[in-house]
Image (cartoon, rainbow, N blue to C red; front, side, top):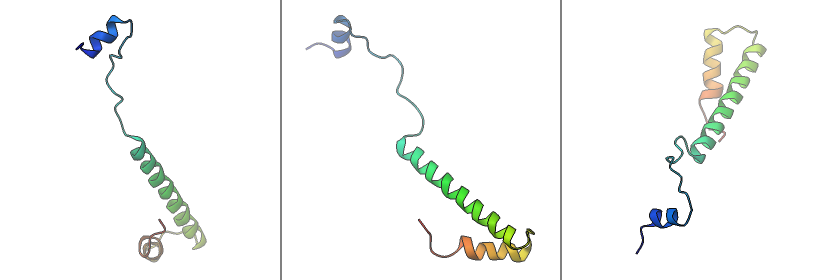
Length: 76
């Protein structure tokens, strides 16, 4: 039985010599994109809330943001 790389090289086929692609896979990239999208949406909602409450970031505003956006049921 022939050794496969040797058999292929003898028939004129070249095998790739570079290693496999490194980095995040498809699902990791998809999850990162979803998390980034959700973060941008949350940032927009918080900016809209601050603008609607006078544009000042006070202790009361911070507590209200935590109450509205960081607690409760998730929208995922």
